[in-house]
Amino acid sequence: MQGLSNINYLKNNFPLAWEKIKDLDENLFEDAIIEEAKSGLNTLKIRSEGDFKYIHSKYDPLKEAQSIIKKNENNLEKSKIIIFFGTGLGYHIELILRAYPDIRAYIYEPNSEVLYYFLKERSFSESQLKRFRNIFIDRDSFLREIENIIRLNRDSLTILELPSYKSFYPDEYQFFIETIRSSIKNRRSNIITEYSFQKRWIINSMKNFKHVLNTPNVIVENKGRFKDKPAILVAAGPSLNEEIENIRKIKEEGLAYIFSVGSAINTLIANNIYPDAATTYDPTEHNQKVFLKVKEQNIKEIPLIFGSSVGYETIENYPGKLYHMITSQDKVSNYYLDNENTEPIDIVLDAPSIAVVTLQLLNYLGFNPIILAGQNLAYVGTKNHSEGVFYSNDLSDEELKNALEVKDVYGNTIKTNNGYNSARRQMELYIKQLKNLTVINTTKGGADIEGAPFMELEKVMNKYLNVKLVKDKFLENWDFHYDKSNLKDKSNRMDIYKNEAETIMKEYYTLLDKMENLLINNNTKELQNMYNLLNLTIDKIEENPYFNTFILQMNRLYHQLLSEEIKILSEEKNLRKKNEKLIKEYRIFMDRCKSDFELITPIYEELKENILEYCK
Image (cartoon, rainbow, N blue to C red; front, top):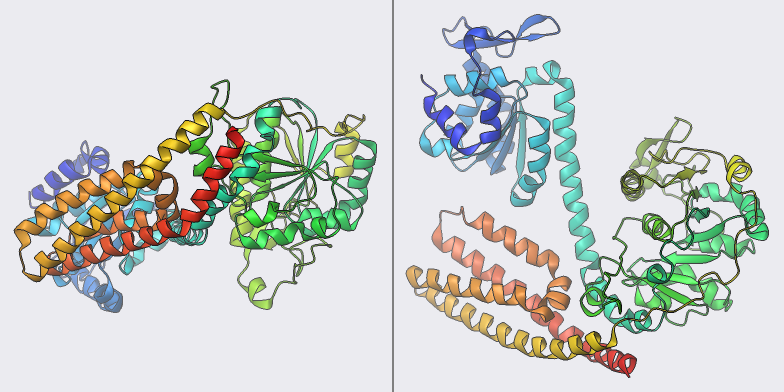
């Protein structure tokens, strides 16, 4: 059998794909048939919509493959990675591997019988087989691996489909393309988020720590306390304008607890409605603008529940009462704090929207149902905020042109953006997980939120909000305090870890200097031994609590990219080029860490003083 080595390689390296074809018998194939083309080479036809249709030319499949490559040669010359959609008998794959010896290949083949024939018909050398990174034959395995493929392949990527497959497998092709696009988009979004916030999350958490120590933890104090009480989660979508009088009535008659999220506080204040509490978690410096009116007007009646990694400027000089919730991005509180009764401290997970964070909070507190108002997660005309949000501008033509389209609560098509769409999906995910929670979406014309059926607010009020139940000063208790003894011990130990971190950093730089000299002298054997020592030093860095709590968190994107770069460069054949690149990347990473080490030293000293004051 010509393709026996292919079959053995598949069996040994891609067990999931092997499972799909190992029991196939070509004598029993019903959906794929090989026949001889006019040129004398084999061609292939498959069953499609009841008839057999040719995947390749029935005259000359090799010439057809050459034409496919010619059409894509500009991309292929720039690419190191190629993802094939459909193999057919693989003429084009064989030619590409011969013509482009540095290219690495992934295959998605939706037909197991075709994959069998591909492996049987083509003859690949051992070195060519090693360039196949994975072979997928089902959606699940492709979904599991695609993000890893995108993450570890930063070079130009070529997607190459057999022309016939787009018409034979339109649903599979749509899935294939959308999965890759989505993975690339998520990758870019995650990198932008990490790059933008990795330092702010930690600096905020350090600066906010004094407020965390000196305010009640709203979840610990009130977990389950409001069981089956209704809550209105008020967001600043344009549709909030239509609900102001209903919300005023709910507030005046105490029919439900009103929680304002993000910018909605400004619309409510503009209409002389004070929510029972406002929530905030945005780590940016810009977030302080949201509460500018509250501070300017010295409004003391609105409690603010802040995520512990929120932009520290937001809570400085806030006139009302403060309450906190620990966020997943706050590695400082998560390291230092313990509950006095040894129970774990509940946290809220980071999310694309404060509404999603607040949904978690309200679920912890026991509220049910949770009623969404102004939760458009989409545009209304040229508006994306309700009236009263003084820093909001009309949408530009460019923003509207680049908008996504989603379904609204009435089934109509509306425009939105990536941020809103991401928040909607995240909210849907949480609602799905919180099985005993009823979430009702009252946002007229807002995006449809799966799991939150739409009901007009007037009808919700008639059905669920019939009696006065809101109590004044409902969050005022404060019985819980963090464990001071453990906190003091951890603070003392952190000083020791900080000194150790400085020593490890010096050790790292000494090794790098030696490695650079060995590279200059072309001493590759000794250089390899130094890599082993450097990796041991990196292990020490990753295990050191000062690095782990502060420095690596501020550089976690670069830490991740360094790890990925090491894996990518493991395949570089030019040893000198590989070592130059590796040493450079190692140094860039530690230079960033050293810079942040110096940056946070005064903030760390301030943190220690706040801990000492609290422990007194």
